[in-house]
Each structure stands twice: as C-alpha cells, then as structure tokens.
Amino acid sequence: AGSFQEAGVIQQAYSLNFPLHVVPASHAQCPAWSAFSVSSPAIVLETVKQAGAGPEAVVVRLYEAHGSTVTAWLQTSLPIKEAMLCDLLEQPLEGGHLPLEKQGLRLSFTPFRVLSILLLQSC
Image 1 (cartoon, rainbow, N blue to C red):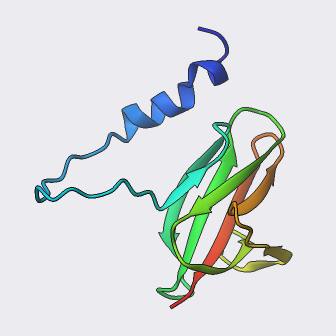
Image 2: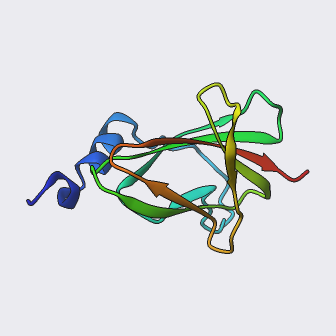
C-alpha cells in the first residue's frame, strides 16, 4: 500500500534476491552485532569490500534509492581512523575527507546519487 518508498519495495527486493543463509554455530549466546548501519531507509548500503590499498582499507558504496535529497549517518563498529570519498577506482577525491563524528559519518545525497567511501582502519 502507498508509494514504493512507504511499502519498502527496495528492502523486500533485496530480501528476495539476496536471502540470508543459516550457518550452524555453537550454542553459546552471542550478542547482536552489525558492522554497518545507515540512519535512513532511502539509503542502500550496496557494497562492502576490501580495498586494493591493503587489508586495513575497506570501501563501502551507498546510493540514494527514493529519489530524494537526504542526509544520513553511516555508523560502523570497525575501528576507523580515517574516511574519505573516493572514485570507482578507489582513488581519494580531492577535498573528499569526511570527519569522523560521534554519530558516525554524515553523508549528503541528492536523488539517486552513488557514494563510494574509503575507510582506513586503525591497526
């Protein structure tokens, strides 16, 4: 019911096309954990991958999926020491340094914008 944004069509499509896989584990109780979270349902975290720069670097790629202008927070439990916007070849963009804030990384999107972010982890 409602618009595709209100109906959660994008989230449902990802759930259908990329279902979670159950992996047997021990009976030990583990606390809930998430490597990344995004504060807006309009933003899709599409890719998380090791960067070509080395094992301490990660690239995340996000896009705005609702056709809106939105500011969102990307939060991570990884020990990040530096974050910067990068191109598709994972080269940092001039003036693309992103400040690390208590809430995470503040990201601004225009309709359907794709952002690639290079994250450097502390050792």
